Image 1 (tube, one colour):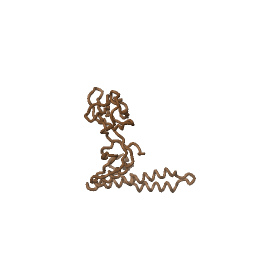
Image 2: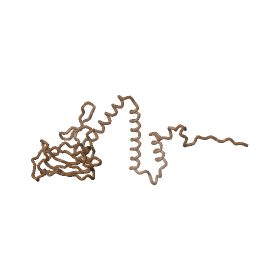
Image 3: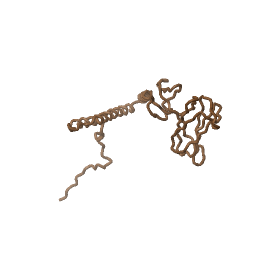
Image 4: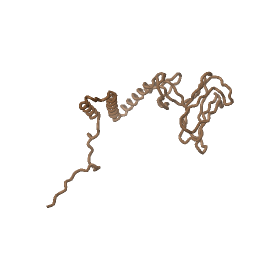
Amino acid sequence: MQISKLSAASPQDPQQPINPKTQLGKDDFLRLLTVQLRFQDPLDPMDNTQFISQMAQFSSLEQLQNVNKNLEGDPADQAQLGAALRSSMAASLVGRQVEVAARQAVYDGDRDARLSYRLAPGTGEAHLQILDALGRLVRDFELPAHPARGQVEWNGKSQAGARVPPGAYRVALLAADGAGRPLEGGEVLESLKVEAVRYAGQEPRLWAGEREFSLEDLRGITEDGD
């Protein structure tokens, strides 16, 4: 007697359609959380921190799905969503310390001026220079190639050791690779506390003291301001 073979789709068959319900959505996530709460041990209930963390994950999942739906819309909706996200991010930075590219070092005649820097990959030699308004060298700091980030403190003295007048001085970062070829990509950075957000059309502009900059000018977010 000949027995015919039973045919079945292999789980590895690439032609087998994917059941969309095999992917968890926000409704499935909430259903699992509800079941977890229903069958938890009453003598050892779920920790509040764990519960809040899971609810935060659920909220994030829902927001990401809503964002994904909006991104599938027309270009006008996408532009509006992008503007809303930039505005929200800008507002969240008020009171925070951020890093931006430094144009100058300000020496007030009393406290040292602190400057941060970031070196490009492949840097073999680097110098942070402080220049006067005419571009003349005031002070030169030789920087270690590693680590790629660091800080220098300028005590207001020139290369010859003389005290310079208080004021704003230009800064420049000169770098070269291991073969001595000029290398770009490094920056001198300064830390600023964001005080306000103002708008030029729909584009948010951040303000710190007398300095105005955009979200694209940010190089990092360091810590909460005092």
